[in-house]
Length: 132
Image (cartoon, helix red, strand yellow):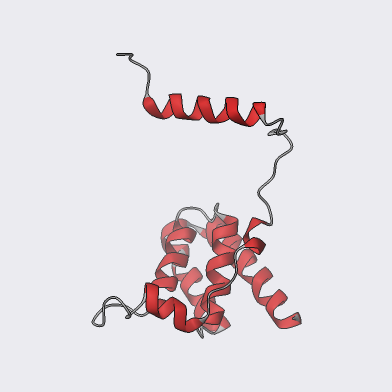
């Protein structure tokens, strides 16, 4: 047995595999990946993430508000995930005001910089949605 951390071993193997595939990891950027993920229809979100599995539980829109709040309180660093969550909230029927309030509430816990960053990301999605 070795004293090496299994996670470190796995990461090292992954990096070696990527190098063998001749992937330029220094130039790789995940920005824009969220565009590859489709927005689920409202009914599908409700079936899998809402009351479909737990009739007495939270609906999908409420769960998405909680997700957005959590992503904001973590410092709004997961940009793609915030944009994706906002897209799904719009599809689930959330209003701009509700989305803004969910983010603003987290200003008390995450601080103004995180709240501002999340608002900017949400606004990008909402503006793009309006122009479409």
